[in-house]
Amino acid sequence: MGSDFGQNAYWAVILGGSSGLGLASALKLARHGYNICIVHRNSKNEMRMIQKDFEEFNQYNIKFLSFNADASRPEKRSFIISSLKEGIAGGKVRCLIHSVSKGNLKPMIGENASLQNDDFFITLQHMAINLYDWVKEMFHNDLFAPDGRVISFTSEGNKKAIKNYAAVSTAKAALEAITRNIALEFAPYGIRANCIQAGITDTRSLRMIPGNEKMKVQAINRNPFQKLTTPQDVANVVYLLCRDEASWINGAVIPVDGGESFC
Amino acid sequence: MNKNQIIEKFKEILEPYVQNPEALENFSEESDFINDLKINSTNMVDVFLDVEDAFDIEIENAELEQIQSSEDAIDVITRKLEEKEKLSNS
Image 1 (cartoon, chains in turn yellow, purple):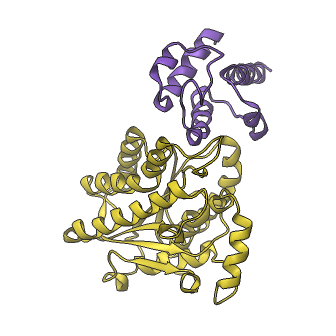
Image 2 (image 1 turned 135 degrees about the horizontal axis):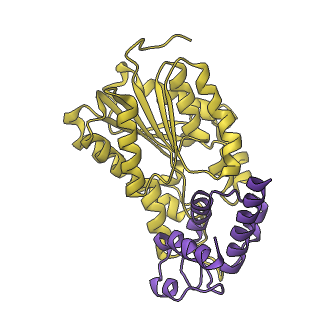
Image 3 (image 1 turned 90 degrees about the vertical axis):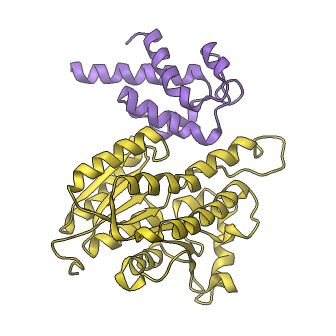
């Protein structure tokens, strides 16, 4: 597949890019000539598998950077952003993708391990407010391209109540609100910010949710195409949103689910 | 690295996650991560990712699941450091 950009390749920064929607999006953009910077947090054990996935980036004629660090720690964020700035040497970031999944999945009621006040705060910090911190610091470091994109991933849990999902649901609602306000307040600087609302996708994050097997069966049954969303389905739309032609889409929550959410 | 040094380094790692600073000051091998130190359960994964980085060791998932107390954690770190030393001397 040919590069969309030739010599002046843009960069895409993917927070939470070592698996699932983040990795699929990174690979898709790499195939189209984007240079890729992935920020992720994984154990040494997990890194052996991930290194194999990352090897695919070498097949494309692009630059690839990765940072194994907690993206929501301020000192790590600053370190990564300054390393990125150095690494891309005058290049620009076309696209920042937020695919971080770190939250509490606990029931509200129950004797043991029920949802607590701090569970909400920690989940909000990693899965919502973190996006704002990154956009702001990257913006102040003059890293965004003139026609930049911010893309975050939400789910149907933004409006629906799902058992054990209260903290993540709260974070998704906040993530959408933050994305919308980025769309408003950074528009004068050329940034377009949107949320992709993926259908049920069989990722590692989904498999953490108690009852996910049942969720998958239900999703297949109600989906007009009778199948689950794949990470590649979502990555394709990430790519579309990064194209010049998508520049008038701003502040939207876009379902990418084959129609699952209206059924 | 002796046991005290390991404990000191482990306390530094715990510090950003501890929601009860007093319990960290009085840290002992009996300290419970959740009940005493009030570390959020989600953050326990990060504690051991940080342990891997700080001590330059690798902890297997099965070993991770066995860690219930601070004592277990310090034992695993000590053992891993010893294994590493043996490897580098062999």
